[in-house]
Image (cartoon, rainbow, N blue to C red; front, side):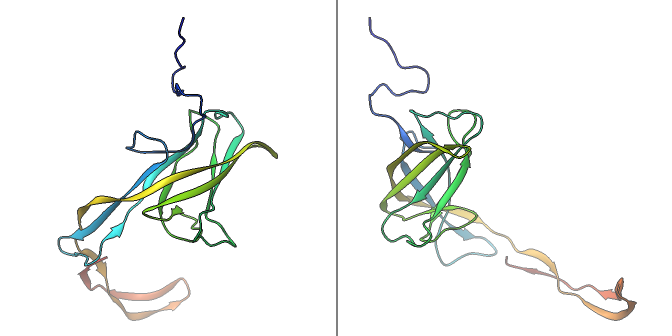
Length: 185
């Protein structure tokens, strides 16, 4: 009798390791969105956005107290400080999410990759001070073929000034003259 894979597992013998990308059905296929601003504050250039990703490994699933560290070791990345992400790997079927965008140096806000290229990663799944699994995987990163238009309006800011200084440290301005203007962010 033929057995079927358990829920969330692949039917092939190859372990599944890498990034699950929001909106993508295939593992390790990263499509970065492109956008430009329109409206009151348009942009003349096109920007690369970010996508949400989760690390997964079919051989070492998440468990309480685990974390995963992933480094982008692709050629062209800053070799003295490879871009990396350190994610919780303790529940569900994958790690805590990380945002991915383009770049060549480590960023504290997002995990960076090279666009329109194959990117190589190394990873470690850890439980406290022990390494449970170590390996490598590759992902293909492409920019979207379409450019999304995002409306951007001016925002109101106060360009006022202090007309009369206060007498002490706790009230440095006795009378503020407000001058509200609209500017592009």
